[in-house]
Length: 196
Image 1 (cartoon, rainbow, N blue to C red):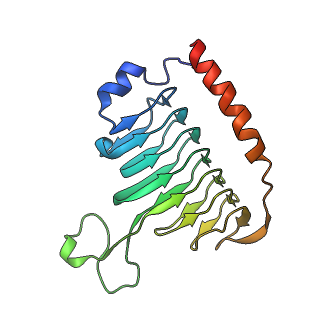
Image 2 (cartoon, rainbow, N blue to C red):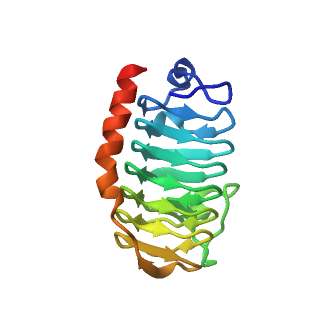
């Protein structure tokens, strides 16, 4: 495992109070966590600078969350399954204000005057979200699906498809070659862990 002063040490991560975290976890000292006791991190996870993670978040194994990613789960849930990539400046919302104008909005308003939308967001195994994208409440990015850069995801993305745009629309099918590479990678990862 690569370590340096820009990432928390194992002891520091343990003391931070995550609900759970695995082995080979790299978390930037410049990332922020709210409700850290509700956040789970699997094995071989990297969270880069200037990320904000808030609420119920379950992150699987072999996941990279690039710089400047915002994940807001509130009391709902954002779940990232194994081998997910979230590129820089992506925002994922499992919680949102109602924008229709029938209620008041923002965190400075008492709950009785608001209508908060809370719906689980899931990024399934092998999915990737391109830089600058936004994922709204209730979305499922299915297994192997890809979201192109600067996309607005308003509907769930079918498995092994590439979607892009605002709103995101199908571009083409995605290759499944990564399924063959997964086992080779896992063997190498386990061997490396034994030697560390």
